[in-house]
Length: 486
Image 1 (cartoon, rainbow, N blue to C red):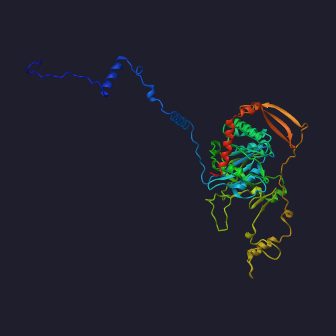
Image 2 (image 1 turned 180 degrees about the vertical axis):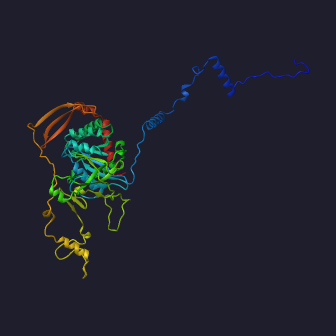
Image 3 (image 1 turned 60 degrees about the vertical axis):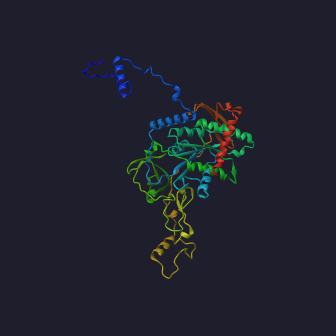
């Protein structure tokens, strides 16, 4: 009971909830040295995933973000129109490399290629050009093409099996950045039994996956029709090449390099006549890739050595993209190919000469016969320049008779040192592969072949091919057939 005349006061009540109470409670526990982190209990089922599919997607997304953070993206520093992508066709002799290049050129440009010599540049789309190069069957040529290849097409004789050249080239590719690789099986028309053909496809496919990676693309060229590959199969292969992405390799983007598609010897003829082994001045033509090249820098020519760069000049694109091509007139057509060394186009290169091919409707002053000139003027008066040009054609001696120009060429005759028809060389573990194999040298169809025999080939027999492999192989064939429809 309160005394009369005195004011009554409420007793203080501390907060039981809210941020102030939590802060006070935390400070009190800290002073007492008591922690309730371990005593806090959570319901594990309250934070679980309701869907396993959603959990897998979130886990894959988290892993992808982590990988992007670890790998620094490669910056493409190329400017202007992109240079053609280099497609290298590699394989043992007589496996169909030249025929495949001719078929692809025919598909893209509707032109029949008479001979495959040197790089062949074609326009494959509105924003893409391709440059096909046939890899020579020698170790030095394999090393050279592995340095600039964007895509390697490995041709494999399906009727014979894998040969040592394929694995040697794969080992070289691994040491030069390992670009994109696709396999192509040829000579499948020699199989008469359908069941044996199917098992051979599966066996070679699994072996190819073992050497490259699981899921590597392997195309099948069933056979020849009138001396050429099937248009549908070539079309499917060309579609895969046209839409393929080529990530830039860091080492190549930081070094300038040129794939020479033609060359010209500009050494004075009198100097060559006096000394056939004098120093030559050579002009090399090609697309510059990587970074910029400076004048006076040292350049390395494969198989020749290091030389000083006297100068570099930017020339008009011999095979421009359709969007960048500038037409001067209505009769100027879009140029879809550029192959000066293969005899396709305006220039034809021989061993010691360069020939210029001009169509008849472009000829203005050259003589067709002794009495008339195509496109010449028929008026009374003649131009002085036209008379001068026609007078140069009436020469008494040809250039070959006036000046004898010879070019040194180093060619070796193939030596036949083999005394036995068959020879077997012991195994060396193939680097980068999960199995060892032996090199078996024999003479097949009149020529020496180096077959690769694997130790675990006996494991891949009929019982290992399940129904899943058969369904997977059928799906691959259906996917190739549906490309044309899509």
